[in-house]
Amino acid sequence: MPDCCGGRMESVTLSVSGMKCEGCVERVVRSLKALDGVHEASASLADKKVSVSYDPGTVRREDIESTIENLGYRVQR
Image (tube, rainbow, N blue to C red):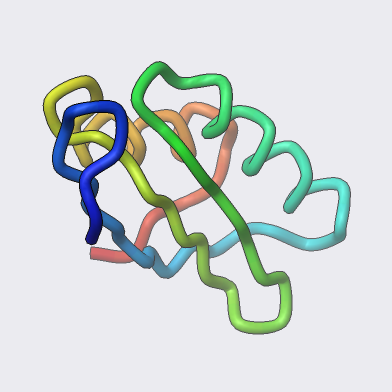
């Protein structure tokens, strides 16, 4: 990933179960984008996937996963 804002960017795609509608997708994306260090987030209801680009110096992958799980969805590990 290219550097952004002086930091190295990483991206991750997670399998997430429990998203049942577009409202679920929007809720996950909105919550992830609110995290400091997350630069982009998207989700696919059909694929049950969430993709996130983030600055690992600001936010950890574990923080991203726990944000999703705190909303009531399950990250498949």
